[in-house]
Amino acid sequence: MSYVRALSCRKCGREYPPEPINLCDFCFSPLEVVYDYKSMAKAVSRENLSSGPASMWRYRDLLPVESEVVDIGTGFTPLVKADNLGRELGLEQLYIKNDCLNPTYSFKDRVVSVAITKAREFGFETVACASTGNLAASVAAHAAQANMKSYVFVASDVEQGKLVGIAIYDPVLIAVEGSYDDVNRLCTKVAESYNWGFININLRPYYAEGSKTLGYEVAEQLGWRAPECVVAPAASGLLFTRIWKGLDEFSMLGLIEPVNTHMYVTQAAGSSPIVNAFEAGSLHVHPVKPNTIAKSIAIGNPADGYYALRVARQSGGAACAVTDGELVAGMKLLAQTEGIFAETAGGVVVAGLKKLVASGAIKKGELTVAFITGAGLKTQEAVSDVVRPLVIKPTLESFKEVLGERVVV
Ligand SMILES: Cc1ncc(COP(=O)(O)O)c(C=O)c1O
Ligand SMILES: [Zn+2]
Image 1 (tube, rainbow, N blue to C red):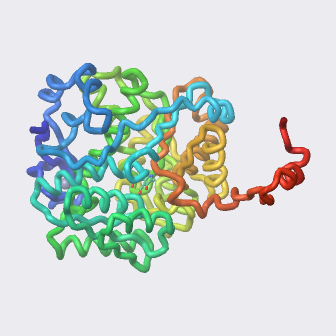
Image 2: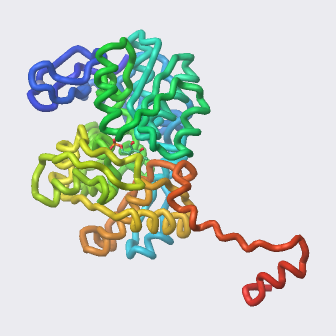
Image 3: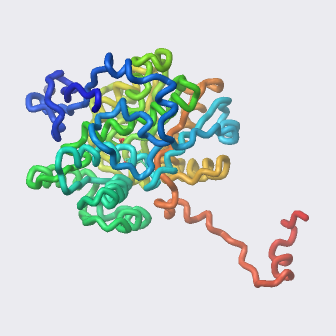
């Protein structure tokens, strides 16, 4: 049993039964899950949450599922105190939430675990998604484990590492000749024609809830408190809004003090419609045509951009864009200070964080959590220039000769 009360329209507040639907019939705004927080508050405590499994499912009572979950071992990823990176950037209390360490190497396992569980509850035998790469891998993996069929749609120029990381689970993989925004538009039409559980279309309200667990985990891992600053990437903007919702719900349930976290959103400059709107002082996003190597977060027309902007504004945060050169430097810096190899989206976060500290937005003493949401082996081409081995013959002489002055005895 869950504490779900209904689905509710985020704009006009109209309520709907919790079914596989994602838009309000009246104003076409997104629907979101609403809960009976009074009853939920009686059921959850710090003690019973922390005695749960070492996975995102320790927060099951705060999620919209009714049945046995589809779980491939997602969540409760490390929150690392990043002293080396902090020193480099000028921050005294920096933490990295390392969500590369999920089963398919990105935070998408959190959203998919919830959405595919709902798909099975609703009786769908087939699941599908429109993806920039990571979501497709996660959907295919979960479908394999749940014995469901999956159709995953990606843009045909997705990175090779992403493609292999999807195809290995043997979904029906469809590469669309167009941008992610084209893929998304096509999938909206496919979803109307086929009775499938579309993870990020008709199951989107449930999918969205999975990302709240990032906020919960960080608060619990910090000793039941919210950070002062959060830095996270945005594509559709949904993840960013749900980190905030996770923190907010924890405080509503009395698990942590009222939340004063400043929420900072980062994008690649070649696809930064949310940052553009923030800088223009607007809550309305103008779509752009993406052109960046950070393909996982290259969405030109972000569905939740308005809500992400509201979170950034109302929390006293900001929005920051970085160039492809800066994000590559960010990937290298994270790897070379903390031993974490993130994908391009992680490079965007680190480079964004660097700028936010340099500009004085994030202060030296503020407890800051940077969310690293996907792993670097999937986007190797971004940093392939680091490969410069010293090539030698298999002899000690050759080794000594090539190393020359560099040898430390
Ligand atoms: C690695 C990574 N980080 C962040 C995001 C952003 O997710 P959202 O669309 O919820 O903003 C994505 C989306 O695909 C992603 O793959
Ligand atoms: Zn409405």
